[in-house]
Amino acid sequence: MNKKENTIIFEHQLCSGQTLRVVLGDVTTESVDAIVNAANEYLMHGGGVAGAIRRQGGAVIQQESSAWVQKNGPVVTGGAAITSGGNLPAKYVIHAVGPVWGSGHEEIKLINAVQSALVLANSHQLTSISMPGISSGIFGGPKDICARVIIQTTLEYLQQNNTTLQEIRFCNIDEPTALAFMKEAEQIFGSGEI
Image (cartoon, rainbow, N blue to C red; front, side):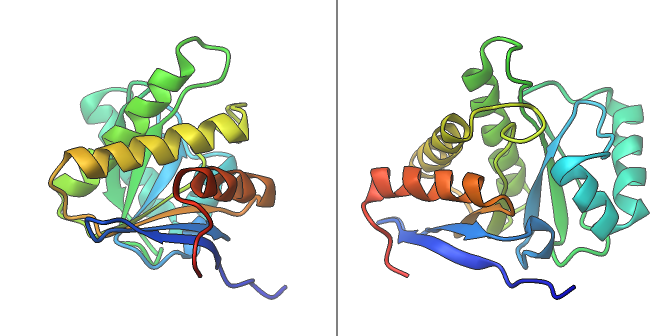
């Protein structure tokens, strides 16, 4: 089976110089400093994006994740942890724990998860990051709400903080999720020039 190339379906450069891109494709193939994993609190990477990252990145990602939890305890919902990227093109994986939909205060928890991922990226002086639709898959979050919260939280973080981040990509292999991100980006910025 031929691997499809990731496709940029929306792009916008902020006045501050950072570039936001919406990508249809596989986050595990993104050539960025870090990809974000939609993780659970125990960093057990079984299904969804987490399972794909574990399969593509190799056993070291699960080993480092398990060691992180053993040392620090579970990652709280809204928190994040960082490991190496293993065999992935990305140097790091930032494991952000979004909410399971129906658990209450989901949007606040998702905002916290996105902020935690961005803070970790900045503290490691990363310049590029690729983030999937955290909580929009097996955690049951509505794709449009997750896209809105993730993009708006990222935008607010970039506007309110000095950051090393220059490129933020929102990458989803699921076309309906990628299109939800594109629609949200177009509502915020107008139609993106590719």
